[in-house]
Amino acid sequence: MDDGRVATFERVERDGVAVHTVPSIFEACGVGVAFSERTGGVSVGPYASLDLAGHVGDDPESVDRNRDLLFESVGIALLRDVLTTAEQVHGTQVAEVTRDVAGCGALVEGGRSPLKGVDTLWTRERGIPLMLMYADCVPVVLVRPSVPAAAVVHAGWRGLAGGVVRAAADAMGGLGGEDDLIAFVGPHIGACCYEVGRDVVSHFESRFATIAAASFHLDLGAVVTQELVRSGVPEGRQCHLGICTAHNTDRFFSHRAEGQTGRHGALAVIL
Image 1 (cartoon, rainbow, N blue to C red):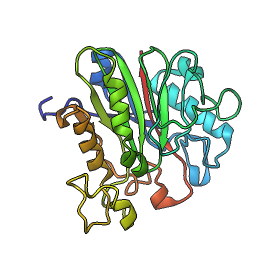
Image 2 (cartoon, one colour; image 1 turned 180 degrees about the horizontal axis):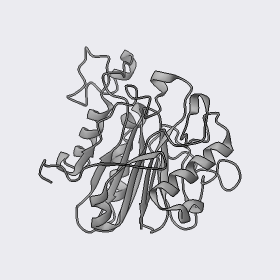
Image 3 (cartoon, rainbow, N blue to C red; image 1 turned 90 degrees about the vertical axis):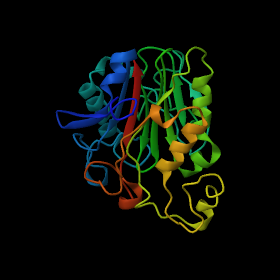
Image 4 (cartoon, one colour; image 1 turned 90 degrees about the horizontal axis):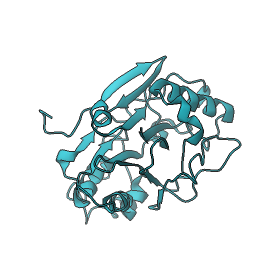
């Protein structure tokens, strides 16, 4: 790319559903990547309107319909039944998604439950969409074009302190072949809005040059950047959307800014 980045995001809107996608990576290896916005769905109240999460108190039928709408918008409606999600416990556990677990968490009510205790899903299987949900935490999608393989990572401060990004990169890096891991980082709360206590800062200040001992504003994006570099993904193979969720609640959900709210998603699928 002319600006030194591996790729650039493109915002695409269809039928009111907006996503940030990466056409160049799909053209290169058939991996679809999408980070959703909050508009175009059927949820109401604090969940308005494209809430994708089944664990925040929204009407389950509305959430399932929102997932339908997202899949229709990005052109993978035929894969809706094998959507795979995870419990998301702010931990570091990584799960490989194979055919035998495809579809876990596809529906809020009915069907199989999301994969328990997991904050990273990865696959090398074609036709299995992976999706995790966010409302300030950092969504990270990792892609190995040479395999191809893809992962979706849920990175909040606890997961980052525990090494969730490194664990995900290690799983993807163990596949052999070319060292070509790429990272796409979606919308998340910025340091401008993420004020935390001394206990949280203490987990990071001795390990990351970006975290000053006197600061109480945690830059999760900078932590992710450094963790990726340490995991073998240089900044030239990272693409950051750079949008603060708390400053843009008209487009994204933010637990810090709104309290009770819905969740947008990060989606990856190999086609």
